[in-house]
Amino acid sequence: MNKAFLFTLFLSLIILFRIAADSHIEHSDQFGVQAAYYFDNNRGGDTDSALVWPSYTPIEAPDTYPQGVDEGRDLGNGWGGAELQATYEHRMKIPMLTGAGALTRGNNLLVTLKTNIAPVIAEAEVKAKLTPIAFLSFETGGNIGTGWTLGFNGLGLNSDGTGVAETDPFPGIVSVAWLAGTFQFDLAAVMPGEWNHVVTSLTAKFRYQNFSAAQEGEAWLYKADEGENLNGYQYFGSYVLGYQMPLKMNFAGFMVETEQYLGETADLSPMEEEGAWGSDFIETRFGPLVNFALSDTDSLTVLFQMKTQKRYTEETIHDAYFMTRDYDSTYTKFERIAFSYTHKF
Image (cartoon, rainbow, N blue to C red; front, side, top):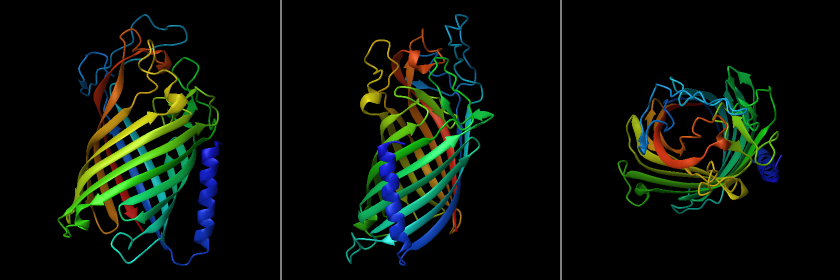
């Protein structure tokens, strides 16, 4: 395991021992189910348009394949994709750095123990979020996970040039550690009123991910994704502007998320180099979200997202192995519609 993950785990254990000796703790549990449908598209293969609409007619790989060990790929599959995951969380809220003023009255340390189960993966996670002042919070955390094959491949190396990830059961451990900071503002804090909750949230997250079976520069698949994961540092940004209201639909907003590799991983094959696949590409997801308060204990969030993606040259776009493709330009596609149901105990 990497040093960043071990440090996070050590810090988390210290916090947990501290919690065990404290009686002024608010405990809560919640169960959740997340599901999503991913729209099918032709991966920018039949148009130069900056916006690619959903398409359910795959573009077949030409007769020039196989090329070496690469069998080629069709652009699209005719139905799209699906995602399903169940989670269980235990939360411990500890008053910390509290004061009498509006900015410090509710300050706390929130520690979360979480498990994620999907048809082909299992994960365990621990994170601690400190709110030292009303509009600012800091979070550290880590998780470990593994996968198997059950119709879909949960985890495996994708580094042999075929573009098809290995399917060995439990091939290793994926470990992730992160540090994040969030700035949040609610207009109602300065203009009180139940209809005045215009909220803003800006999050910067730095994380390190590692698959124990992968060497430097070797790609791997996780959670039946595209198989383009790499060991290394990443930056995630999350930016939300929304309106909170005292109705059944108690929140509506717009969210933008960014994801990119940093350092040596980003420099493996940068977009500006000739014949490069674009290791420094910044993926951007954006779209509206709404939350419904079904009851005092149940809620449902609905999210629609679009996403920027890499378009490759005509000569390489059908390569199944992404590291032999040649980045050409960027396009935007309709990504997914997602649902997240939560029940609090």
